[in-house]
Length: 114
Image 1 (cartoon, rainbow, N blue to C red):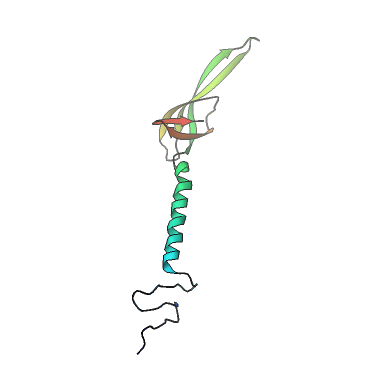
Image 2: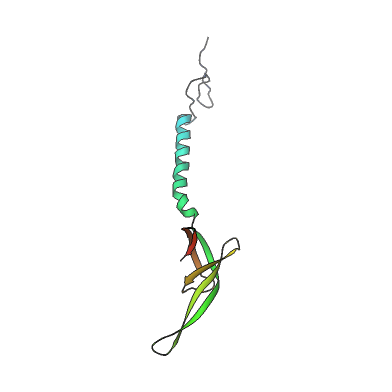
C-alpha cells in the first residue's frame, strides 16, 4: 500500500496536506508570495504617476506688455487645455502657446499645470 504517489509531470505529492511543488522546484506558497509582493510594489510605484496627466493647450490669451525700450512684448497665457480624451478644462499657465504639452496633476482638489 502506497501512502504517496508522485506525479511525474508536475513533481507534486498527491496526498492532502502535503506541500505542493511546481515543476521548477519552488513551492506554491512561495510563488504566490512573490506574485503578491510584486503586485504591491507595482502599486506603490505607479500610484503617484496615476494622478499626473498630459494635456495640450487649446486656447491662449495674449496680453501686450510695454517694455522700457519702447517695444511691445506679448505675454501669452494658456486658459484652456484639452485632455487626451478630448475634454477641455480651464487652466492658467503663463508663457505657453497653442499646442504646447502641459503636465497637469491634482493638488488640493485643484488642477495644477506646468
